[in-house]
Length: 133
Image (tube, rainbow, N blue to C red; front, top):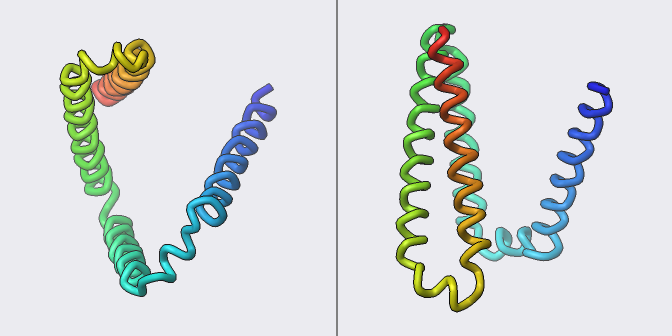
């Protein structure tokens, strides 16, 4: 049973990657976007080189430093996600008169509740995991 889950998971990932590539190349015309202006390619190249150097420097650090840095980066990302949940709730309150008119109130409320609760459960589980250490 476990092996079939693994195979199914990789098939889903491969299908999603193939669909994203198809969408980028044929639907959004991504290569045409980059070939229209050389500065766009330069920005991607600079970001790639800088990111590679950052990862290389991170991997050269000793294990305890890497663990501490990873925890700090993850914590910063969690704080940003909490801020994003708060911002999206604020925007939802701002749209309280508009959403019932377009009949999207329950859809938006359900999506908002699902994303915020998913993030909340993830934070609690990770906090319990790291608290044990």
